[in-house]
Image: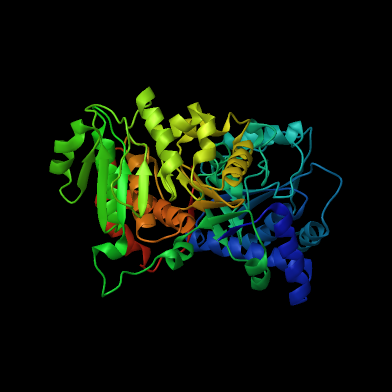
Length: 511
């Protein structure tokens, strides 16, 4: 599912109006109708006060048109026009006249107004600002937003929380609506998925307002939101006439004294995702525990007992995952650097492999092309440097991935995979996955998919999706709090089965 910028959405509106030969207010009416039907299907005429706060642009016009539909269905409404400018969009004015024709008289709010009373039992429709916001709200409008946020009422935002720009950080974090729910038109907004801006809505959902399908398909974007429908075509079914060699031999390199479990989880995940064979390369101290805990895997050991001093793989594997639990001892750093110079296939690099790279930047030039790096936030910061905000982080990550021709995974609530100047935003996962070993499991899953013959980018996108989905299934069984990394592994098979179930209507997750 494509994520459009504000300018691309305006282009889509214009293209649709011209191609379908409709007036611009027809799109506004479609939006209002979709909003009304969503609300009405849930309230069913319930006796509740709905307070609509409408700006004087097109977002406000959506709210004004919605008010007309609500009134015609006999809902108790109060309409407030937030009069923040002398300029008004023509479609806002048109719908304002339609509202007045029905003897509905809005209250106009200005910089000297008394803040409207809001009951915690009211429903607020926030239609003050839309995606066109290009400067900080006036101070008095900011105070109105603070008043709404403090009301404890349910807040439904139209398209995007007011005060939140769609393509940059907000000017004042206190002057952004904190929405209980966002009904966004046609496509999601990138700000829904970033840690610093995703906090402004608990949930979001898309409403189809009939933007032209041809434009939506052909328009190139910088980011895509990877849903079930987007991921399904990546999957390659297993063949009837096949054997374990058909699905590749993966090697998991890592571990140290007291950290063999990281390798065990990665190797287990690698086999659980479908790799035909898995071998682990660990210090001598890990031999017995791995042979006991994971009998399906083979074990190679370093000459040293407690740490890796030299990486020797006596065969050519199909994929290698490296770094988890490996440590950054000087001998290990030297072994890793030597290994990078000798290896001739893309790697999946995690944990201490990433830490060694950040401590020894010259080694970045030795990474095989199309390798996959899977840092958590602090590992990412050590790799690409500090960032001012989430948008700066994305720019730095995109530049880093392009410079080194690698796939870069930014792990988080909505993990984003970068390659070739484009970001792929994941739609699965939950807070229960913020637990020890979760990243090791992801590394193993991606390594297994690469071993099976998937190219680096599709292996990563599919691996990230299935990792999150397995976590969602696991959390549904034991709760967020009790989910462990091994619980993610246990549900990889169920994630595969879930991938091809008919999905429920798409609802987005808030932060």
